Figure (cartoon, rainbow, N blue to C red):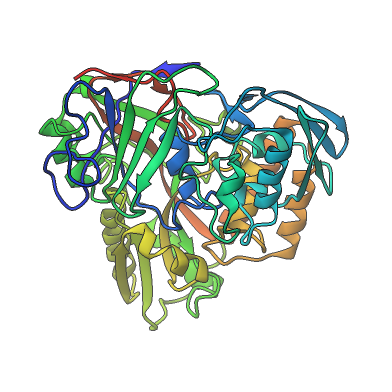
Length: 495
């Protein structure tokens, strides 16, 4: 396993006082080796494994998948030791022996099959399964066979998604509210959480890959970037996640970890908007923001101007692009007011919203800006409540497959389609691309679809982001550009 010298930290939400465990006791007292982990995003769906919350439990070391991604984005064994394609639509996975869930239940082929089938039938469908359907059956006691309705060349990559973690049968006692609390397989067990401000994990001594180095992990959720930075500078935390890029000069370079990501901040233009349903109005918006130097100003040069939906610095195949051709602009901005929304959990986004709104007002739009924590806004984003949404989105997070990302974000049935876009012809192209087995061919198809999305101004890429952590005294965390794994069995803290 490859590691970077990252740290993790805890911060009590709503204050910058001493990090404490639930109930107010000092979680790092005595001689316990506990990792304090400041996490920037509060749960939005009670830690449901079928949502973005899946990454929260996964990052803390509580849950695992059959297969995981290595730092290069290639699948490697996790709860499955090996796999093979046995037919055009079937894959057989050998299940790791001697794995025990946190509740004491042995992991078997039958429990794995039940967990994955629960995900496959969940509503809404997990984004990792966008464009695919799976059926999972135990094959004896030591393997499962995953069958798809159509050949799926990226099935193995899909199964790396934190949305497809394998949990104990007790996790599904309430099928509508599956939970990773006390039901995972990772080196740390979630033992307590209020689902709003904190989550406590204890070491799992029976972990299949050896006893973890720490006694536990204490997680707190804090959405305000300035508060995370202040806590790090004052020594209250060991790692502060998603620090404000423009304020990183307040800490030393030896305390900063920045990793380029397959992540793009884009302005999504809602197709169901009474104003932006008009391609000419969308082009007015695009042209108004085209010359903003958001990477150089708001990100203080710690991000790259976006050349498209895909970051060529991370995905070399994205360099081979044909310039977009945009629709003719409308003669003037609509007189109807429009609403621009973003979330406050990433500190740069509200500043970007202000700059974008000013640019739109300069060309005649009447703009209202709405910025609140993500967990308060997700449903409205997906419902098309706002005319414009500034979203920071990792195109490698769900499946590490660009075609799957495009289906989820721009397909007619996309599960994260903030643009509310639907073009049957584009859907047909995506379906054809999904059948391609060769990764290079999939990349070419993804770039072609990207151009259509940009040509129609469904989204305007703004910057390519990097992860920014304040680091002090923790080693053995995962080197994961896909922003999934953080805490590992080898994580240690020295304070």
